[in-house]
Length: 251
Image 1 (cartoon, rainbow, N blue to C red):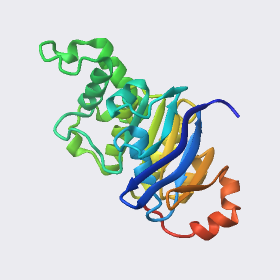
Image 2 (tube, one colour):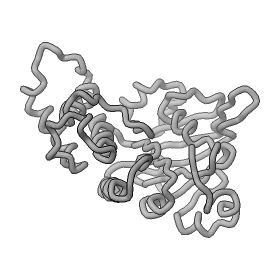
Image 3 (cartoon, rainbow, N blue to C red):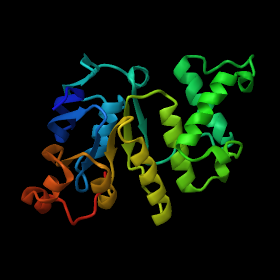
Image 4 (cartoon, rainbow, N blue to C red):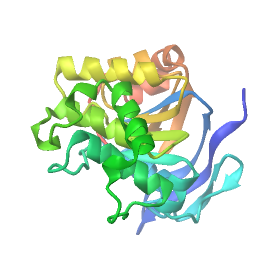
């Protein structure tokens, strides 16, 4: 097994007497697709918030590329190479598809508020942003306002925005939420193309997508990880089947 890109050790998050994350340890390997599944109230979204720096753990530690990031804020983690997408898209609806990706690229390079220089004249920046749109199959929609996109296209754009931040680890929180069959298939195909280029940690309720994409799967129940393994190992695990598989999943 290779050295983990991200190591979670004895992570605890308490809200009063309730331990939403309960002594959880987990390793995410470089370039793997690692899925997190679990029943209602398992603590998946809280875990993602702690990894992204939006929720402070009560105790435990997080190590990214060998560096302790437990006390790092969200912006610091983005700069170090961790980027998160959400269940609900967080885009600028009045701006064009290309402009949304440009903003993310500018923030990554540290000049997000360069008002006095027309951004569209920066050929290198526009070229790079356009390349991300090609990666997510939205190059034909570059000049369209975001509000005109379908829900599935907005999720594709959100992936492009995340990629423009230059991450090594993508935290994808229910990327298929609210999608129909065709949009889901399109996004699964996109994530499959990105597989091996980026390390991805995915929280998702669509088991067919999870088992087709993931190299490894971890199962959370009451804030604890009860099993980690390949999709085949997880599907054959009696404890997992009793605790979760066959039921609906929600963060």
